[in-house]
Each structure stands twice: as structure tokens, then as C-alpha cells.
Image 1 (cartoon, helix red, strand yellow):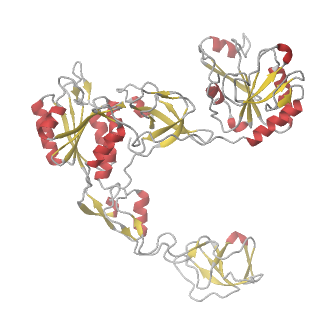
Image 2 (cartoon, helix red, strand yellow):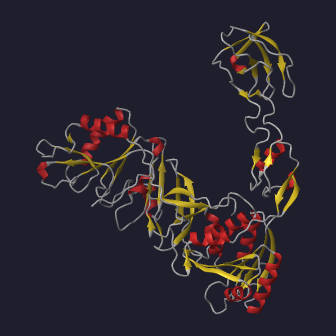
Image 3 (tube, one colour):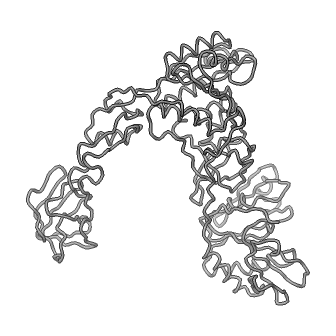
Length: 599
């Protein structure tokens, strides 16, 4: 039985497998120089079934490793070697080992051993040893290199174990034909196929229920362009001009009339600088010197770069390609007059503000900022800057919630810490709902005796749901008090931030009138195993990076305790394991939710 193998490298991996005594090492020692002579850059990975040392007792590197260094790198001007102490009870992880190789310096990896892995392999077989075939149990055997006495069925590709040139031909052909496999993209883990469990909603169900209650703000205000950063455009910005306004030159050079037959030289009639024009009509055989951005003279339809032109005695000769329309920017080709330059619902940043300025807009109409009221509840929570009481913690959740809401362009009302009493929470929630579009609390939403939020919300408003099948962040209260949306976030700091990312963020974006408020999940490859429990969606703090294969790869930040805010600082995304999966193995595809600019 083969174990699944996923090649993490952008180059092919080919294994050589056989029973002990068949001559794997002997064959590879003969094959490697032949492949090298034929121009193939090789990396070789060998599986040793025993303890081994690669340096010499008494040498500094050996003694430092034996003294306790987990990794020891020794280098000279001709080679370097990294020795790593990594005791394991099972065979080493081939995927991890392959990732240690410099894939950009090799064309092919030859692997000796690891015969239980489902990687492409050549089997070596000698009839005299009396061993069974491996190919009968392993469909990943591409060919069998064997002796003359070996009997093989016709459908198995046969190689001569004593003909190194023939085996080299096969390896070269395999390397030439290999293409990196396309990763299997799994369905989005937050899609509508997720199902809840009784009172526990799926993540998708929770998001849909929340967004169904969100009505975008209709109130607008007029702002100067300088004051519009991170605001939502209330109406379409329609361009009053063509961009560019005139057909102009895309580079410094010579504008000319491209009409067959072309003359050997063009008469230079003048010069056009940016902000100026050439008022006469250019005729065939004529050219003008022109600067980048300067309007093309009437009649001109091409520009040749200055470095491909040679001007002398009032004439210019061109080298290189000449064709109509080259290096010319047509009037309105970026934005035509009367076209929508920015749609209503766009969030304005530096690029959007620059675009509006280029169209002549000095002020814009923006949606009123959402108002968010925030408080923490719990007698165990202390205000930062005060003395920490016994058995208490400092309040971090209120500060992360405020910061994330401000990043989304909201006005924030900080209500501080509310004591654990029904009367205090009733007054705080009712007062907040009268002032804000959204009220967010943290803590007090689990099932403890002192958790009053659910009771208060039911008394003065309405409860829409209470739990989500996810980790972290299962206790999430959502409802309304009059017209204000209410989110009761968990008390654990990481769970608070994860729930805000998934549920509060899209609600605030939709409330503000933003068009693109849906969470953006990106496909990635797991570089380690991510575990979950079937029936719930797991969000692991993780670090995403671009691998040598050009794809996104993701690793965990380590321990995933819900109180470990340091993991949010280390990470740049959440790795999402859908409710249908119990684990995602190393090398398998999964989706990530980037933190983006919110954190």
C-alpha cells in the first residue's frame, strides 16, 4: 500500500526503489555522471535506515552538534552542509526533506528509497535474489530495470539494469515530459453547502443571517477630496473629460505619418513639448520631434522612440519596427468622457483620490460614516493603565475592536467596561443603540451564571442566533435593538478578532454602502498538517508566503490557544478547514483568509 505523496517543488522528483542488495546505490553512482554529462543538474536524496554521521568525530562541527546544537551548518569556498538533529519515531517526511533542497539550482531530484510513498519510481529487480515485485502493489512504478532472467508482462516497461545509457535516456525523457500538476482547488469552505447543527449555525448561515439584516446607510455628505480617504463614494463619478484629453505621444521621439510607401528619411518640421501643440497638419514624409504626453499633430499616426532615430541636416531616419499606431495614446482610451470612472460604493484610497483629481473633481459625495459603539463586560476585566486586580485581566478586546472598526472608516463610541449586572448591561445596551448603527460587546456571551447579554438582548431587542459551528469563536450573539445591529463577541481575545473578521467586517462594509464586502479567500498549499473536527469550521492562525513553485504556501503560527494574541501578531492570515474535513495534510490544498490591512 502506497502513502500519498505531493511534490512540493517546481521540478520533477523520480524515485529508485528495490529490495536491499539489488544495487540501487551502485546503479545511481553510474547513472549520475552520465546524466550530468548530458546537461542535467541533479539533486539526490537518500533514505538511510540507520543512524549516521556525515562529519568526523573531533572536528568542530561534530563536537558542536553533539554538544546540543539542533542545526549545524559548516561551509567552505567549495561546499556547505547543513546537519540537523531531528529524532522521529517514524520514517522522515519526504515532503519536508525536499523543501530543504535549492530547487532553483537543480533540474531533477533522484530519490533512493522511500518505496512506500506514491511518488513516480523506477523499480530495480534481479531474479537471482528471489524477491517479489514491487510494481504489483504500487501503480506509481513507471518502469522496471531488471536482468535478462527477469520475466515481466508485456504491459510493464522494461529497462536493462546493466544498460546505464538506456536508463539515462528514460530519465531524461521523463524530466523533459514532466509538468507541475495543477493543485486541486477545493470548494470554498464558506459556501452554501455548509449546514448547521440545531441551534448551532454554520459560518455561511451566520454570515447570511447577519447580512440579511443590514440595510446600507442612505445619508450622504459632501467632502473635499483631501478629506475623502477611506470613505465610500455615494454616487457614480462620471468623467467630464476624455482621459487622456488628446491623442498624445507615449514617449520621447518623433511623430510622423505612417503611410506606405515610407520614405527613407522624414523632413523634421518642428518640435512639440508637453502642454504645447503643432498647429499645422503633418504631411506624409514629414515628422516632428515630440515629448511624452505632448499632443500628436493632425495627420500624425505613429511615434518612433528617440533612441531608434538619427537626425541630421533637417531629416530623420528611423531604425527598428515602424507601424501605424505605435507609441500613441488615443484620446479617451483610459476613460471616455461621460463614462463612469468610479462606481458608487467604491472605497477611496490613494489611487482613487488621484484618479478623481485627474478628472477635475475637487469634492465628492460620500456615505455617512457608520457609528459603532463598543463596550466590554465582565468583573474580571481591568482598564489598561490601572492597577491589575487579583484574578483579573487587562481589557484587550475593546482596543482591537475599536482599531478594526476605525480601519473600516467607522466613527467609534467607547463605552468602556460595563459591570456584570443585568441592570448595568440593560442601560448600556439601550443607550448605545440610541446613539449608534452597530453595538459591539465582548465577553458575557457563553453559558456562565454571570453572562447576562443574551437575557438583556432578548428583553429589550431581539436575538437572531447565539452559536456558530466554528473554532475559535463559537459563542457569537447577533440580534437587534430597535434599528441598531448588535454583536456579542466572545471573551477570548483571538476569538474576538476572528469573529470580527468573519462576521462584523462584512456587515460594516455593507452598512457603509461598499460594493466589495465579501470575504476574499485565496487557495494555498498546506506545508504542514492542519487538524479540525468534522462538523465545524476551523480557523487557524497562519503565515502565508510565496513558495519556490510560485504558489501560496501556508504554515501554522504554532499553538492555537484562543487567548494567545501573539499568534495574531505573528500571522498574516487564517487557514480555513471546512466543516467537511477533519484534517488537511501537508501538501494538500486549502483556503486562507488574509488579514489584509484590517489588522
